[in-house]
Length: 306
Image 1 (cartoon, rainbow, N blue to C red):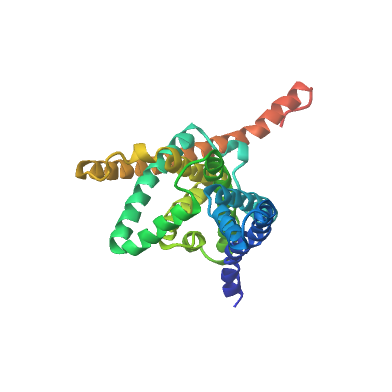
Image 2 (cartoon, helix red, strand yellow):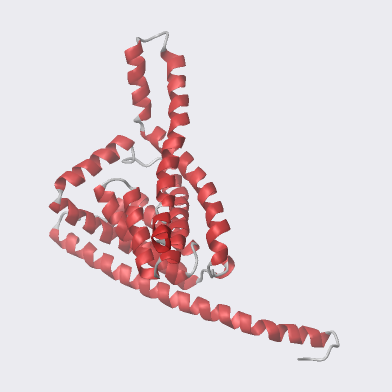
């Protein structure tokens, strides 16, 4: 029963995240509604004021602003939660030593490879369930994420990766590893990451992406690496989408980009593993040298060595 309770506790970050989104919506919707009413109640009939209110709520700028406010609050809450309850209980690579040039080279390659793989995964699912793809495309048009604004770019490439990694690879995975072995824990947080997106198409590719991010988090020994990978993945999706998928509807390019995606993903994982090994060896070597450095310093002061 205790283990079952720990597993169920892993659902709490997801439930709090969904609740937090709803709580934040209430004052923002209320403030925007009051602003529209005050500006238009003398000029238009009440039903037209409602239409103007709805028009404001369905604009891309309003949706992005709502997402930014939520994500900033989530970073504050889950960042404190992770720092207070998770980070101190798990062995972590020191932040200043968590990256090297191999890891920094691996992450953009892996991000581009994952863009290809998740796109092909979405296309495969769309063939099986075209209604899911239609619902997804309709949702993207409704929320206004089809055009890139500076605020959307900042949210997608910086704020969202930090908040989502803190929630799922930080707090959720941290508690999941207390309740089960690492592999099931990584799978559980990936499924919850998919559920978080609340539609089938995004949920499927987000769950796959969550598996990779969970693996990267465990292999890298620090939350910074999945945050950077998530950021690079979103940057590629926001700014390089037309370049990465040039003429993908043609058979030659369809096979070419599939091959490129697999190669980039494999190369990125290989370089990440190599970079992590080199980083860990460097950290071990630094710790080995610390006692020797103290002994040399003591000798310089005239104290006996050793």
